[in-house]
Picture 1 (cartoon, helix red, strand yellow):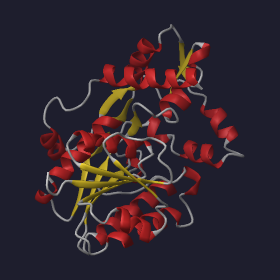
Picture 2 (cartoon, helix red, strand yellow):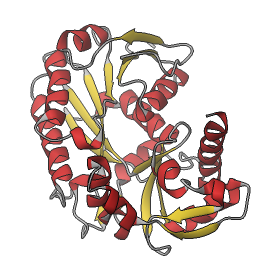
Picture 3 (spheres, one colour):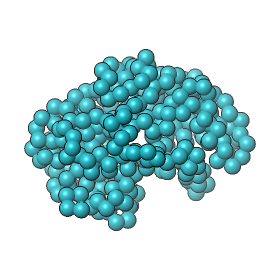
Picture 4 (cartoon, one colour):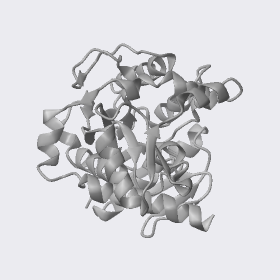
Length: 314
């Protein structure tokens, strides 16, 4: 495909792995950078290295036209400038290269009162984590003035094959073997979910259309904006047993958060589950076209099956 070469930074992460598959299936020449090849993808190239080293990143991306930043720090490691430092290493490696950087954005940049969220909506964070994400996107916007194209693709909470450590596996299905399922918010409230294979394919579409965009662009991926009741019904249908469905014990998470900084940070983000926040973007919808998303039943079935099989094999 000529100039269809992509490097995925953080290729072992949930999004990075999905992106490796999506770009490969679309005919791209794919290279993944990671500390170890924990999730090999046939038909792609793997480079072992530390993405905190600017020379390693520069070498891994040297022949790429597009770079997907799938790097992700553990929640409690975002502070003290570490998230900004991780991104700065990538930007330093790419400065003046003319390459396109695809960056996954979050809904953290917005407040609980922001119910309908188009890319043009002003950003005002509810938490310090959101303030960090705003600073990261400002860094990308600034870098886009230095011969780098930066494209942010914002999405809701991930689910999909391989996400055993996400909200599905660690919260909703944490006691499924005991016949219990947990909903994270009131059953009638909507929540934004992003099925990872769909999100990765959306990245491919943006990469393919990149020459029609400005140097800095933001797109919002609607994903599955469904009620907690709808997602629970779909999950219960594919668990393979009748389970009791009850509210997630947030009190327990907060109690454990006294000694566990990751859980404490997750509690701070609870507003995302108690407020309806819809990502909307007619421009991206038009680019992706009708029927782009995997239907909810299929996406949930694949995710649940993967989690259950992984636990059986453990």
